[in-house]
Amino acid sequence: MHREYVLVHGAAHGAWCWEDVAKHLVANGHRVVALDLPGHGQRAAEVRRASIATYTDAIVDAMAREGVSRGIVVGHSMGGLVIPKVAERVPARVAHLVFLAAIVVPDGGSLVGTNMTAPARESLRAMASGRSDGAILFPAETAWLRWMGDLPRDVAAAALARLTPQPLRPIVEPVPMGAFYATSVARTYVRCLRDAAVTPAKAAEYAARLGVTPIDLDCAHDAMLSKPAEVARILDHIAV
Image (cartoon, rainbow, N blue to C red; front, side):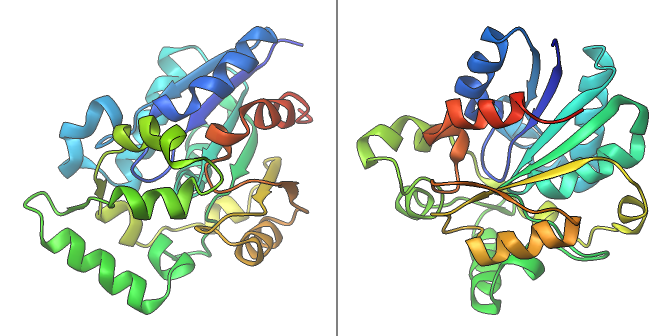
């Protein structure tokens, strides 16, 4: 069955991180839209524009431009804050939401407040204050251990080189979620069992917040890099 997938990256990543997953989905006859959010990837210069609202605008605009009529919208990590807002904005264009190792905040919650300890939050703010653009540049070693620990360092090198500084605002601003939680949009949560960024315990909490039982993958946080075929297989079997 022909399907439409909209792939939304997480913090410091870009559309590039979906390349291998997209290849599998396209080979199976599906359409794929993967985009850079403002301040990321090829839109890195827009770092000062980045917010949950502008992220949402970018996805909604891409879906309209590409003629997505009933998309399976996938959000990785930070993308879990954005895809519910897309479902609120254009419910007729969204068939299913997939949260891949994603943060799922309560109504009015923020990414850092929901998924990070107080010392980690202070560390991020300090890193952002040291840059003129207020973004966070994660050291390659930190990014590897936190996101790609199941990939050998030399294999992960190409992906690490493509990371961009993460704008601070989208990860600290509160996100209203009441309207989303009042909807009945179909949703799936995929948990990564070797995840150092969204731990399995946290992921179970987030899946419960969505009212679903997680699908488990034996990998680290960036499942689309280390397990692209498995991610594509899960997406290919999502019930619509």
